[in-house]
Amino acid sequence: MLKPFVPNLLVHAVHNISLDELRARDIRGLLFDLDNTLLAHYGNEFTAEVTGWIQQVRDQGFQVCIVSNGPSHRTLLLADKLGVPGVPRSGKPRRRGLRRALDQLGLTPAQAAMVGDQIFTDVWAGNRLGLYTILVAPIEVREPWFIRIKRLLEVVVLRLAGVRERG
Image (cartoon, rainbow, N blue to C red):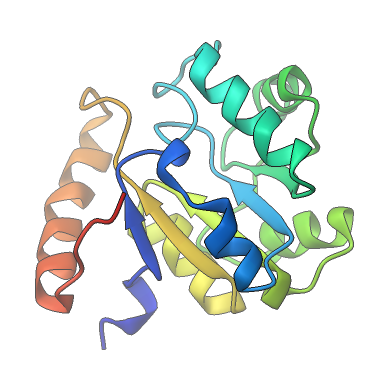
């Protein structure tokens, strides 16, 4: 019952993801959520650590795409700042946005990982499509009320599933 919401990997932050482990799994692309995954919720600037890590990911041959439920202008502007494609208004947990991202990168679900901070959008969508799913801790705790409510449910699901953080 909990399986659709359980990530394959739980890490503290994106830079804790082992690219060697992903390569060993034949993963060639990473789909990233934006808010509270790569930058603060509703933020407009990436930290130097995030931009440097994304560049390292790309330098090591991985393809990258931003997949956000956010508006087009913001998603595409931020994706452009990283020099990667973006899929705005993706509709997660529906799969259509992830499919569009995979099409843009020319990858199959087995060749990609979904990286995000929420299990009821990012992880659920990725698992439904057959992607390797990576849950990161949210960058900041200040979030809209409806997300704070979901966070309480996320804690329960992760505890019941026995998921522990690595990295």
